[in-house]
Length: 138
Image 1 (cartoon, helix red, strand yellow):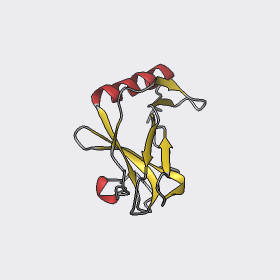
Image 2 (image 1 turned 30 degrees about the vertical axis):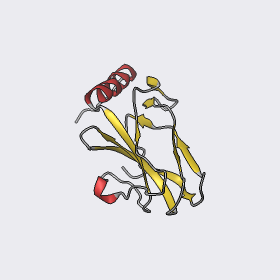
Image 3 (image 1 turned 30 degrees about the horizontal axis):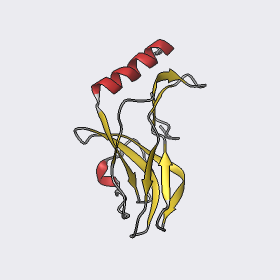
Image 4 (image 1 turned 90 degrees about the horizontal axis):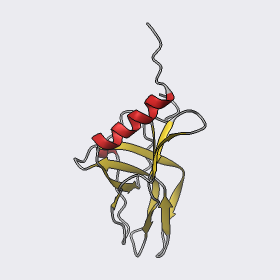
């Protein structure tokens, strides 16, 4: 079997195709202690439910596909902020992104869970998509 090589220009072009093919639309926080893997699905994620929580919309990326220091193509969007205005308390373990059709596109667990347990507590994150999974055990 030969080795498949995707040149740097191809990585950027494929990232652009992903953006065009999927109207990436929604970003949510999940509150269950789930570690994403390659079998991740929406049914395994429990959406946050603290007062003031609302699903956010992602629009056009703010960074067109570029390469990072490891030669992976990546795309970023504007930061999104979720702010608690009341109970119940949640512990947020990460976020996930779905397209307009409700397909799970990617999920990311934070390095440390974030307690959202008082009014005014907020969580701001910058969605970022790379051209390959970052899961430690592919």
